[in-house]
Image 1 (cartoon, rainbow, N blue to C red):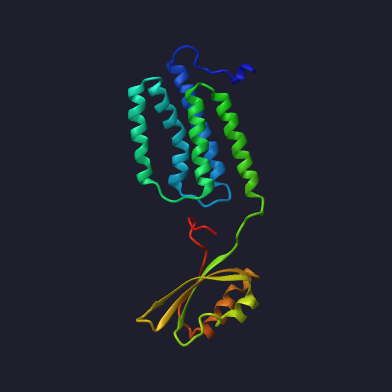
Image 2: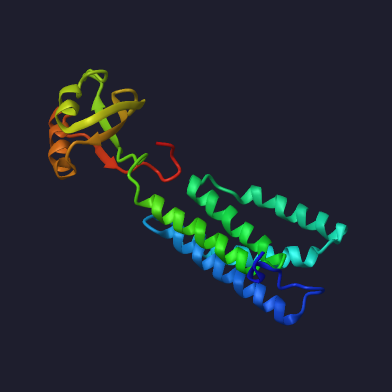
Length: 221
């Protein structure tokens, strides 16, 4: 095996090797954060977490270093993380596993392997972002209608004119049962005609509230 893949930690951890591994963890975090944020809307706090997490994992594993008591304490501390977790996208979960793996590799001294692994996975992530297969361009449409309107087929002709596909996903009553709120998943034929589509719906629902928006980031499409 090439020497570049040898561990920089030969016998015991020194200040120099600690700083080298810590710097490598930081570099891996930056690479992973760039890949996670490429063509994807992510929060600043999530990007900061991806940058800092490899360094934290590296330091924690270095402190444990075979000490069973410390390892049990660290395991208990990390188990509390699940109580602060929120639903996330699959790409976010992969990014977290990526930086944790890089941190573990750096803790073993394999800094070159950690950087190479992070680069390969990040490049694949960026390439996948250009692939259109599996993308869903559907939007969430909320319409308020009077109880006199046929909610089952009242908009079928408009949907066939302006959308490629549509699906009713939720129905609920409001205003003491005099109004219905309908939620649809729709995919427009032409995004430039969104206003024309909404105007046609307004004429049909008596100019009541209509909202066309992207589905929440955590919602399964």
